[in-house]
Length: 489
Image (cartoon, rainbow, N blue to C red; front, top):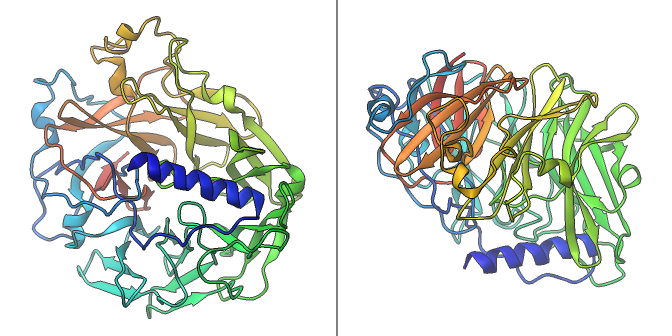
């Protein structure tokens, strides 16, 4: 089944690049579920109400119906000594509490949860039915109130792959999924105060976005990002022209109230034959595209296109003032921290800007299920170089991967996590791993210093988790791997 899903996604990608053949009707709106994710249970005694001291984590996503997770009850610190994974009292991030997101909101089908910047709300998606395309729900921590808002079945197809909060926590931007499901994507908003849903870039196309060969395809608007300084919505707009390599691709801006979008950067001219590609199974950090904290640049993973479909992916920074593009990492750089004996290339899966807008943190993973690698890189946005958070290139043999990493008592494999995100302060990286029945949260300062990440929390309880996205709020909350965390830095 997994191979079929990957094949369908590849076909959709090829169609996106070619702007030609009409894809098969998209599958029904089943949001992604984690293949074998684990939610990290309570880091402290469970709060009496589902609104206090939340904590969350993010799991890799597949496209099957989401699974549900039993309630998490154990305390992570209990197994530290026994598991030979000692907690670090000097860890840069401390976990105050941890709860499964589905337990916090009281809904076993909640997926794709995202925190509002002020930490007052948690938005999530509920799968649809024959009557509705699905619902975006808003959970309010102070009151434990929950408001769910219907998406229009005749206009919205599939599911939103990401819910993007506005800087003032008043609105959420989202789109359909044009890659995995082949749906035309428009920029939609939900206003939290009244639950109203609006399509800001309606092109009149609903469902599959491609047209017959030789005819321009629908206008595909996707990967929305909120400008942190001007409150505008920035997004990617693609339109194929019927022949391979003949398409337009740019970053546009749009007022949150609507109006005519304005092109900010012509990316097709700056980086020809490349597209921002994403898949639910490899959607980490802030996604494949993120705007800097000062609102001046966009970091993006662009995948070069060939006659047979996608090829190498690199990390670029787009200057919103003049539209120029600078490559920070190519495909080779994404593999620089892997050992020579590794047989599987790393695939980039997400980017995040540091709070000072000086660097991009990017994550990559390999597909080897026996000896998987996940590596985080710190890339100086001004071109000052790239540094891995953990460098595995010094591991001489496969056996070394299961031996303690130099300077630690912990196997190197432990430092290759399932997923990660940045801390609420935006100057540390958080990583979640789940090995041999032990789930752990690691943290490391940025820029990397060569010191391995510290163990902030562990638990011996592993449980299935619904798909989620990483997010963070100003009051110390984090969502990651299906968990809602409260942390201190």
